[in-house]
Image (cartoon, rainbow, N blue to C red; front, side, top):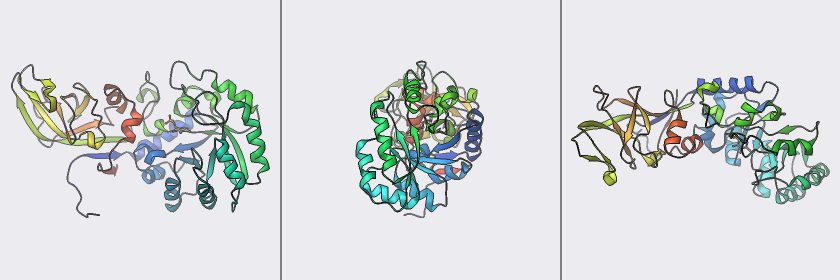
Length: 359
Ligand SMILES: *Cc1c(COP(=O)(O)O)cnc(C)c1O
């Protein structure tokens, strides 16, 4: 690995105080539940270990792969860690036992794997039932039998019933999913059901473990409510600088495809950030951007390493002027909306070449 750090100005700042603040918001919203901080996908692009340190007060962590669990254990985190999709192979079970992880069991294949793999210690299991998302989980009719087999297997510690909602963030709400879940598990079994949206809107879903992801990173799970209105603070700011300035005459175009044509003389700033950094190429002319803290807009197509911003009302902006692509002062949801996507995709899509810097 090169020891020469790039001096390209594009950086993803990770605001540790914002992460800690957002966790406090989770506690306020769900005061009786334990908090499983979801840190899959490299903590939604924010850096697994940085985030885990900032969220050390969480009661546990939710990850996708064993590699993430190993990194957490090696960094000294003794928290409960849940493999959110469970084991993919029998070896995963052996490793999960070695690392003291909890696992999701959502399928017949995983259940028989558990019944037949010798383990050094019992595993805590989140038994997942499909209540309508139709992705992972046992059918409600198969749930009781699956639970009985877990109990009989002698390989299982605590069992927590689990489900995942498809529309907790939408006007449709939980639909029939939570009622179906409750009918199945009764009043006494421990359960985990709430993602960020359900955590914020449906207290009845809190149960024993809430599983917030996006809200910890300071983005709103709802299309119609801002993160600020929910008391959340952005945990990542994608920042860069202007590296060149062009003066366009009326009728001049900028960028590939000449898709933007100046209707008047104007200045544009060329910013070090492109789609190879994870900035969405689908963000067309007019996508909001902050230049020297002031709102402006992108113009023309986003290219691989650069994008262009309108400097019309920014006479003092020039080479070196700071630009915020999203984060503090510019909610990532607004950029996502302009690009026809969601904050989750932009945050998790930060490219490896964009350094994370703790702030
Ligand atoms: C990713 C994930 C979550 C977190 O969802 P958010 O919408 O980001 O809060 C919760 N539960 C499971 C099973 C997940 O995979």
